[in-house]
Length: 401
Image (cartoon, rainbow, N blue to C red; front, side):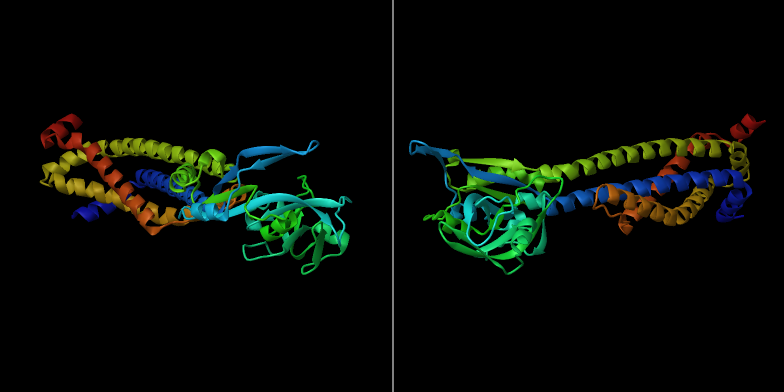
């Protein structure tokens, strides 16, 4: 009787022991497959968040001088020029920027929702990168955002549009000095947040015209958005070293709140998943080795008989390995579809909780996992059988008599 036949006969004859080992292999494969899939998904989600949500640093000019006319005080800040912005944008790790400055303008052909004669103007390089829109306080309801190509364009609130029966393409006029802008978008604010519906978002050309600015420099803040939040500090240091500015006149401040709010959840899930994987693997190895040891050492008499009739130790070990391998392969075939279904359901739960997790099963990782499981089973068989094969056939039979 050859080795393969003896292995198959043993697995089918000892159905109870084989079923116990089969269920153990199924559980191990299920837990490890699902755990690694969730860990991989959280890592992929974190990488995606770094590109989509990202992080930024803000550049502001420090106070330079104060002036007074006897009743009012004016504070002047170090100006930020377009040339300075272009130099900083030369870094390949910065994907976008938005210069933002505020002013006050008086209405000419419309009425502010508050009833006041003047309201706030927020000039932006690209309004889509304005922090109010990034944070979700404001959303674009109609039209489009202001871009670098726009001149004399405006985003207005839904309240201002309804108050003055305005729509996309309508004109707004300001006075002192007189300027006209075209409405290209209408925004809405989160009802749970307090936001001044009088605020009108414009391009910088409009802001400079209203302020009658000559040098056309930026007097507010400039937000620079990096491609990888993990590199934010390094990018800020590189900017300071590479861009020839009097940095004592400027302040750089990092902004990671948007990314941190979501990344913290992903990090927690990642740590818990890693802990789960380590625990599952550790417990599985211990239980597997114990069961294999009990399975093989309970066959001491069988080993002695086989050795006595001239069957080599190599053939007996091969039989044990074939028995275990057959059960493991069957467990992998059964656990594969179950793992996929369970991981997909878990993926839906995590997507609802975190937002952007997608579970995947790369073939290379599954094959690597199965190979490692097979190697662990082989090592377990060899370790469990080693003490038995150190004995001679007569010693084995005498121990059983």
